[in-house]
Each structure stands twice: as C-alpha cells, then as structure tokens.
Amino acid sequence: MEGIAVKPGTGVHLRMGSFLKSTDFVEQTRFRFGGLTGTHFRKLSLSHVRAQQSKEEHATLSPATVLELTPAELKEWRESCEQGNVYTNQGIKIRRRRPNGPLSHDVGPSQFHLHIEGTAPRNILEEIIWHKDTEVSLLKESLPLDTLRKALENAPPARDFVGALRASYLRTGLPALIAEVKKASPSRGVLREDFNPVQIAQAYEAGGAACLSVLTDEKYFQGSFNNLEAVRNAGIKCPLLCKEFIIDAWQIYNARAKGADAVLLIAAVLHDLDIKYMAKICRLLGMVALVEVHDEREMDRVLGIDGIKLVGINNRDLETFDVDISNTRRLLEGERGEVIRKRDIIVVGESGLFTPDDIAYVQNAGVKAVLVGESIVKQADPTKGITGLFGKDISL
Image 1 (tube, rainbow, N blue to C red):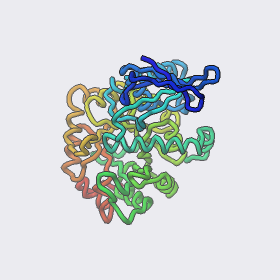
Image 2: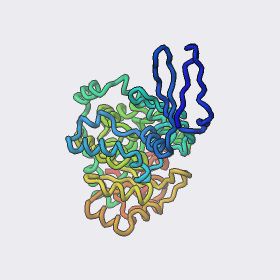
Image 3: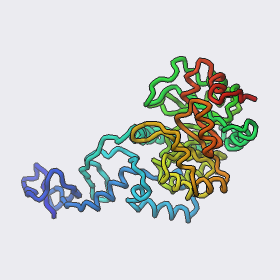
Image 4: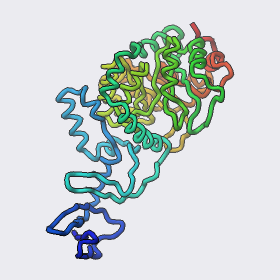
C-alpha cells in the first residue's frame, strides 16, 4: 500500500488516507515534482522491518578492523553483515544499540522510519552496551584510529598474559589468580570507599596474583583508563587485562595504547566473526582475548572459533544477576571438557568465588585460573584477602 503527503505551504493539500495506522511500519521517501515537495509512503512487511531492525540494533566490526583482514576474511565478514538474522541464529539477545523508535536509516534518497517496541534495555548488560555504543562513537571522533595507531609506538611492550597464568598454576598447583582492581559494580554498588588502584594492585601482586584485571568503565563500575595507565606505570609486573565492554575494534587499540596485555570479549554481545577477528587483532598487537561465556550455547560457539586460548565462564545469570558456581561444572562436562583439554585452552572461573571450597569446586570442574574481585578488594588488606580466598599463602 502506498500514499502521498504534500509539504504544507505548497498550495496543494493531499491526504494519505486511512491505509496507514500509527502502529504501521513505513518507508518514507522525500520527493520533488514541479513546484511541489512532499513525501511518499510505502507500507513495509514485518520481515523487511525485522531484518532492518536487526542491522540497526546490532553493530558489527568497525572500519578499524577491516584494516587487519585479508581479502577472504573481509568478504566473509561483509557477507555476515548482510545476514540480518545472524544474531538471532547464534542466540544473541543483547542488542548492540538502543532502538530509538522511530529509528532513522538513510539509504540514498530514502529514509526508513521504523516504529518499534522494546526501547528499554532488557537487562543491565544491554543497558551498559547501549551506553558504550554512544561513548565509543564520541571517543572515536576525538581520537581517530590513525592517531591512536601512532600512540601504539609509545605504548609499553605487551606481556605474556597466558604464560603468566600457566606459570602460576604450575608453581602453586592451584588456579592462577586474575585479581580485579574494581571500585564498584551495578549489582553491589561501591565495594571500597578508600579506593587507590595502584595500592590495591601492589597488594594483589604481593599476595600472589598472576595477572590483574582493571575495570575501565566509568559510568557503571567507576573505573577508568587512567587507573589502567597508573597501574601499568607503577612498575607492576603482573600482566593486565583491560576489563571493558568491547563492541568496536577501536577499543582494542585504545586498550593496548594504555598498556593492556589482554582484553575481554563477551560472547553474549559479539557474534562469532566479531570474536574471531577481534581475537586476531589482539594477536597482531601482542595481546590475548579472554572470551567470556555464560551458557552452553555460547561455549559451543566459542569452541567453534579457531585460535581461542582463554575462555572465561561467568557464573552470573544475565537476566536475573543470580550467581551459581555449578554453571562452571555444567559447561565443562562431557565433550566440551574434552575439546578444551585437547586444545589446551585455559578456562577462567568468574563470579561467585569467595572461599577455598569455591576455588576447589571450580578447579575440580576443570578451571586453571579464576578472576576474582569483590571477595578480595573489600578486605582491609587485599594481600591477606588472597590468602583467605585460597586457604593458604600463594605468594612468591
């Protein structure tokens, strides 16, 4: 169905009629005919809208990534971008940007206005990702990739994050500790009022941490890249994970420029080719990606990607924020566990780890490293907090 509306002030007034309802999906095309200007409307099918909506909601890799891809990889990535249902097919529920109804998408002379429902975030992770989309867009404008690449020339050399985890596991016989420099979280609020990132990092290192994770998100975790740089420049020897919500390859370059040795990639947010090519960029920069999963489907997806060395199992439910450490055992049972052992992938247990029994439980399930923040950063002496967590002194 189609209709026409003529711009007021042209001397001609036509009605669109009743074929369009306020809830309909329409394509709106501006036109000029003689002395008249107006708008042509065409009602869109639901399938057309859903495909367009998927492309709008889920951003893909930025042009920054394309610079690192071979022609074959670029072709593969572009083809994946044309599949509006790729996220649905992979079970990804997190939308990469806010569906501002009505959405606008310029294509040549046409402009699509998609009137859609569900403009509120479904959970805290989706809220964070929507905010991050806006934040990163502004950062890229102020610091273009070319400028950022030049900054890499002055970045401190990347250190062996995986090697540090393996060495700690061999030394202690216990999961290697990635200790988190973390001031606050959306679920727990402020964890430590007297927060000094360098002093906390030094206490972690003295307590036997193999690596450190530094929160860089400001709005939801009260972290910053200043904290990451401060820890790196303080002479801390532990390799550093940039704990950021990565949605754009630009962020990986930025993390490396600030001194990070590893970054977090979340399978609940990124589709398979995003993960594949972002992990490749990490390798090219001398870094490693810790790919985080929450359920069996995400684990299967990640195990289907070549070159992954670190997989984190987050025991926190994304919908309810409930924590269940048996999730780690469930995801490592059967064939999945066999594949992980065969490929020598290090599995990192995340969330809900507070006691020596918790550490023993996930170790028996198959993890060789743990990422812990809350249970040690809240301690008056984080060094002693590490001893309490493991039930013994694991310091050098």
